[in-house]
Amino acid sequence: MRASILIAVILFIVNISYASAALDHAFLQRFADKYNNNIDGAPDMLKELFGNERGELNVVMNNGSILQIGFEMKNARIVKTHRGGISNPTIDIGITEGSVNIITRSNDKAAALQREIAAGRLTFNSKNQFTRTKLGLILSNASVLKFLGGIL
Image (cartoon, rainbow, N blue to C red):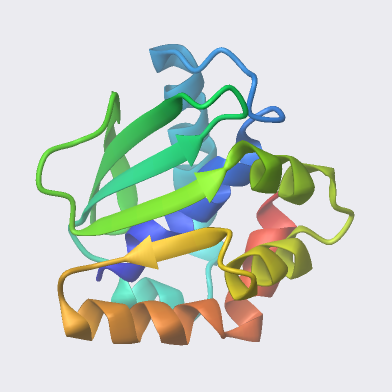
């Protein structure tokens, strides 16, 4: 359920053009379309955990500013994006521009994601303990990381 936000955000992060792309509504919609077109090929574990979620991604830029992106999901699909964040997110995700660059430049994006998570430079938070447990399972699943690497 809340894992859907995790996957969407990971895909969003690696689709940012080295964190300096113009993030306008059209860019966000192109990302949502790409994600939605590929989600049917996700591992069953991932699809079983998808639900109706609200997520917020905060990217700390090199100049100190914070880029906030919110999105809403329904039935494992991104149905709406929000530049500037979203109220009452079920999951908060944090990353730095430097980590975005590391991930986007990597030949093995799944491994780069895993390293950034392990180093604490890509974080996922939820107020709900059950959601935190599911996030931990998703983040450690090799088939999920392989799927993500294939989509990138």
